[in-house]
Each structure stands twice: as C-alpha cells, then as structure tokens.
Image 1 (cartoon, helix red, strand yellow):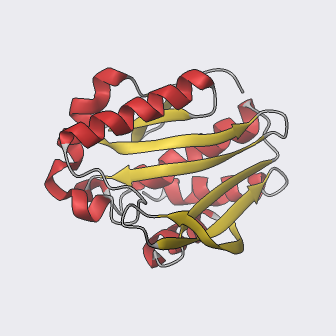
Image 2 (cartoon, rainbow, N blue to C red):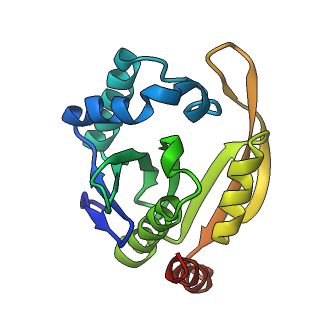
Length: 196
C-alpha cells in the first residue's frame, strides 16, 4: 500500500493530485460549487478554497494516509473532478473511498462507476485490502443509492459524526465491501461498464 498509481480505464483516468492541479480542478467546479460541494462538511466556494483543499489532499498523500486523484475524462482530456483513497490503514489492510466529486456534465455517466471500479480493483488486487469503506451524509439519497449500486453493504449510521462548517451536526451512513465480496462486486461492475 505504498505506490502512488495512475489508474486508467476506457472512460476515465485517475492521476495522483499535485499542487499544480488546483487551477484545473477549480475550472471544473467553478460553475456550480454550491451543488457539487453541497454534501461536503466544508464547501469549496472559491479558487483560494480549492487551493487549500488541494494542499490538504497533497499533504495527506505525502504523509501516506491518502492518495488523492484528479479524475480525467478519457474522451476529452478534461478534468472532471476528484476522488480519494483515504484513511489508509496499512496494518489492518483497509481504506476508504472518499472526497468524490464530479462537475455536473460528468455526473450520471460511466466516469464515476469506472473510477470506483479502478480504485476498488487496485485496493483489493494490488494492495490486498480486506475491507474498503465508503460513507456519505445520511440525507444524501443520491449518493447512498449510488454506493449501494456498486454492491457495497450498508453497515450502519454514525450519529452526530461530523461537524459541518456552519456548526450543524452530520450523521454519516457507512457502507463496506469485503475482500470476499470483491469477486461478485467486480463482475457486477464490469457488466455495467460493458454496457456503457
């Protein structure tokens, strides 16, 4: 669990984030930051906030606790958003897929499905993880449905789990995929991608 991979598929390429990516990420998000970051505990309302967001992601990467990716549309080469392998726990061989966002024109396309597939495949087949978790705001119905469609099992809700930027409390719903479940999840995702 030490390499910093570039993950490439038919629809999407995930490249490790650097400080230099901040302007392109801002360009991808600028038109609709309120909607893109609606469910994030700390929004990214302007270019300075995006730079700070990227700096934090790169710092986590440097410390080995995360791998932050820039999500790139293979067809156009455009930056579509970002996602992250997060809370990397080498000793217990588990991690979280988190901080995922896409610009509106890339939402509900094959990019997100393939990005999750590539990260899950890397986690289970290269890093030999025993568990990958995903979480979202309990009120984010679209995200909950998307995570369930991946084949992840809902495991529970952590009440008052996070404090949002405005001081309100967020309940988080947790999902997980185990290494023993990965072969079935993989077949399911490959089937979806073959039809896209």
